Image: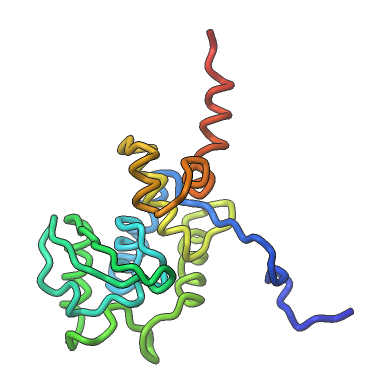
Amino acid sequence: MTTNRPRNQPKKGDLIKVEPIKTINAINKIKKTLEGHPRNFCLFVMGINTNLRASDLLRITAGHVRHLQPGDSFELKEKKTKKTRRITVNNAVVSAIQQLLASRGYDDKESLLLGRKGPLTVPSVNRLVKGWCKDANLKGNYGSHTLRKTFGFMQRTKFNVDIPTLMVMFNHSSQKQTLDYLCIQEDEIKDAYMNEL
C-alpha cells in the first residue's frame, strides 16, 4: 500500500519525542551561527530562556516586549491551555529582542517573529530548529519543542532548579512527567548506577 506521507513523517497517533540541547557548548555554537540573523537569534534565545511553546512564542507582538527591561514581565494567553501566563525576561532575552526590533520598523500589533510572508508558523520553527541542531552536529531528534525542553533541562542540570518548581513552570501533574519530558530521568538513573561505594 502506497501512502503520500514523506518517509520521515510519523504515522498519525505516533509519539514523537524530541530532545533538549544538553550542553552549553552546543547552545553557544548555535548562537554563534545565528549572529547576524536577528529574527532567528531572537527566536532561539527566547525559546531557550523561557518555557513557552513555539505556538506561544509566535503569538508575541512587538508591543508585548518593546519596552521590557531585564526582570520585567509580560502576559500572554497560551494557545494550548487558554491560560494567561506571566513571562519574566532576562538580560539575554531583552538584548535579543532589542537587536531584532532595531533590525526593522515594527508596529506594536505586529508579530515579533516574522517570516517572508507574515508570521512564522510552528512547522517553520520546527524546520529551523532541526537545521540549527544539524549544523551544530548534534545527533538525535530535534524540533520546535527542543527550545522549551532545553530551558527546563538547563534549569535542572546547570542551575539546580528543583523538580517541584519545574513541575509548576511546565504545568505538569507529576515529577515523573517533568523528568520524562526533560529527558532527565534516564540520565539520572544511569548516573546513579555509576556511583561507586
